[in-house]
Every structure is written in structure tokens, then in C-alpha cells.
Image 1 (tube, protein in one colour):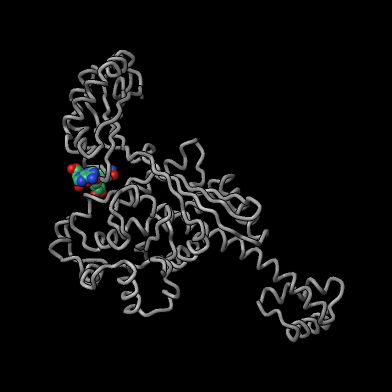
Image 2 (cartoon, rainbow, N blue to C red):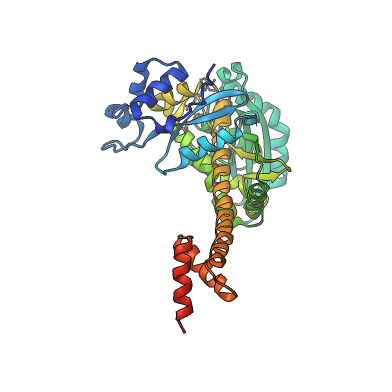
Amino acid sequence: MRSRSRLTGFYRLGIAERRARLLEACGLPESRLAAIDPGALPLEVADGMIENVVGEYALPFAVAVNFVVDGVDVLVPMVVEEPSIVAAASNAARFARPGGFQTEASAPVMIGQIQVVQVDDVEAGAAALRASAPSILDDARRLVPRLADRGGGPVGFDVRILAHPPGPDGGVLVAHLHVDCRDAMGANLVNTLCEALAERVASVAGGRPGLRILSNLTDGRTITVRCRIEEQDAEVRAAVASASRFAELDPYRATTHNKGIMNGVDAVLVATGQDWRAVEAGAHAYAAHTGVYRPLATWQDDGGALVGELVMPLAVGTVGGALHSHPSARFALEMAGIDKADKLAAVAAAAGLATNLAALRALATEGIQRGHMSLHARGVARAAGATGELVELVAAELSACGDVKPDRAREVLARLKESP
Ligand code: NAD
């Protein structure tokens, strides 16, 4: 049986043939493709999504192939404007295919923040809030009975002191309400809860309510994805592991390293109608949570293979948000066979680890090829009769013009010998 995501030569097909193979692979009827046709989003629906709508803005919708995530073949939907990302993801997923990507998702717990200002005695206010935590949590649970029925709901409440009086805001506390949002991204859900609880929290703490909104640093809602790539070339393994260490040592490199991860993650998030700004904000804050900005994914050379691991917060939903209205986003989930938020997070993260590997491999092997090329250029220079310091001069010129051939080497050598 042909695997569902191993669509050999997909990139060589025309669009009509790709669409036919896609339908065959995901088992959807042809009529569903209307959801990704030009004009799929009716203008009046777009007008209801955001304000001041004057038109629509199209981006290509593509499918990354070869992905196996947690033992299941997945066709990965990607919407992105940058060339090479879909090819890079598909290619890296092919390398990872024997073992596939394995993921572990935490419970989908989001944080709602209730700020309390003008607290005269912050220590006493914090203690009072801690003592009232069980009853505040009970109130919170009563506000979202259906979420509790689905196995989610408020699961924790804690308090931190942010500032002692005096100060422009007096004593400042922040209470965190931890909410298991199940398959929702949860921003509206958490914001509604925080608003409903703010007066009570402020009065228990002896202050005034300040802001009440979720935190996008969703470090209670993380995904871990791992893969193992058999790689026979020890030089390639060493170069990828070294590039990974570079990112661990230097925030300037780590930022670009993480951009390579977000290439894959964001393309999946956009295709599936997610709030990618929320994920971006959370990802970068998480990358810096030790006080130094670090890579979200690292790679190690274990002797015969490259072993990669990505850990990042990924707050996504398969209900709510743009999924209410956007037909292409609903199609993307359907085509990928994704019905739960943790599966979506797993696929987006696998795409991120794949584009990260592809970028590191390309950078690392380009360096190796350049090395091979200059060795080769020296050999060609010698074969053309260059000796002593002329070997380096001829080889450098051959490498620079990219024409490492004996004829060219003889020409260059003759010119250099003639020049004073
Ligand atoms: P939503 O408001 O549409 O709520 C989702 C609802 O789906 C829940 O309230 C729940 O009643 C229902 N539901 C049905 N089945 C469910 C299931 N299996 N699990 C969980 N809930 C289920 O969406 P949301 O997820 O609360 O909010 C997401 C939206 O909020 C996004 O569009 C985001 O852009 C936006 N937003 C983000 C921020 C931010 O990130 N700072 C702030 C405000 C709004």
C-alpha cells in the first residue's frame, strides 16, 4: 500500500495532477477543493472577520509531503510567500521518514493574568489571595461548565508580587489563572474568565483591578518534537551539530536559527487559520526564558545519526478563532486529518524541526562543498603546471569564478606567469 504522505515526484506534477493526487491521498471529494480555489473566502465573510475590509489578499496554498508524525502519515498544509520552505520541509521529512517525528504535548494550559494595583500591603494581599485560591478556582470553574465537561477548565491559581509601594501604581500584584483550554487556542475564553474574576481578586488583595488578559508566554502549553536522521557522512553530521552549538552560544545566530524553525511552524499556522502572532510572541519569549535568547531546537551527532529536539510553546486551536469563518483553514485541517489542538501543535512543530534541519544541512553542506571545491581547485591548478605560491593563486581564481577546469587553469596560470 502506498503511504498517504509519501507522494513521490509530487513537485514535478502540474497543479491539476497534484490536486488529484492530494484527493486520492486524503480521501476527500473533489468538491472540497473549492475551499482553496481563488475566491474561496466570500467577500462578505471577509468583511465580517476584520474591520475596514476593501478586498482580499491571496497567498499560495501548498502541501508538504513525506511527514510521519507520531507514527501517522500526515499531508502538511502550508501557506507562505517565501520560496523553498515547502521543498525544504518535504525533503527533511523524507530524511526523517524511517523513524518519523515523535511528539509530546503538555496539557493545553493557558495563563490568564489579573493585575491588581494600589495594594497597600502586597505581602498581606498576596497571602489573602493564596488563601482564597480554592474558592476563586471554584468560581472560575462555574463560569465555564462546558469546558469542564470536555475535560478542561481552570486548573490553578497563583500570585506574584511585582512592585512594593510607593510607586506610580502603588503595590502591584499579578494573579495567574491557569486554564486547560482543550482544543481552543483559548484567548477569548481566558480573557472572559479574567474579566469576570477581576473585581473579586482585587478586593481579596485589597487593591484595584488593573489589566485582565491572557499571557502569550504560554509556557504551560508546550510541545516537544524529536527525530533521528540516519546520516552516513560524518562531516555533514559534525557540521550540523556545530551549527546547532553556534546557535546555543550566540543570540544573533539563535535568532536566525529560530527563524528557520518558524518558517515551517508559521506556514502551517497560517494555512490552518491560527493566531501566528501569538505563537511568535510566545516562542521568542520562551527562547529567552533563561535570560539569554537561545535556540528552540538543537541537534546532536550521535555517531551514526543526527538527533534533533525542538521544545516550544504552541497555543493553537481546532475550534474557534478564524476557523469559524475561513473555509481554507477548515480544509487545511481536514486534509491533514487533524481534529485536535495537540495534533495540530505536533504537526506544526514537526514542520518547524524539518525546516530547521533543512536550513542547517544546507548551510553546513554548502560550507563542506566549498571546502571540497577549493581542494579540487588546488589539484586542477597543480595538474595545469602551477607550483609554489602559484598553486594558491590559480586555485583562488578558479574557485572565485566557479570554473574549476584544466583549460581555465592553464589560461590563468599563463597570465599570472606573464604578469610582473
Ligand atoms: P473562541 O472565542 O472562538 O472560543 C472557542 C470556544 O470554542 C470556547 O469558548 C468553547 O466554548 C468552544 N469549544 C467547542 N469545542 C471545544 C473544545 N473541544 N475545546 C475547547 N473549546 C471548545 O476562541 P478562543 O480559542 O477562546 O480565542 C482565540 C481567538 O482569540 C483567536 O482568534 C485569537 O486571535 C484571538 N485573540 C488573541 C489574543 C492574544 O493572543 N493576545 C487576544 C484576544 C483575542
